[in-house]
Length: 76
Image (cartoon, rainbow, N blue to C red):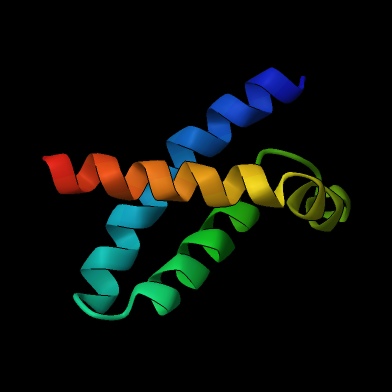
């Protein structure tokens, strides 16, 4: 279950980073990261009651996924 969830988080991170970049533009890195985290936690495919627990449990993984998505976006 966690492997599938981690894969989904990676996919959501790419979408979240693009949406944050489009919405906020340049020089707002912290705001974009917060926006991306909220996007991911809202879209995680688990029941709403478990989302806060999953978000806390996987917070460092979510941060890493966002950072990787940012690097990937910058390469393109």
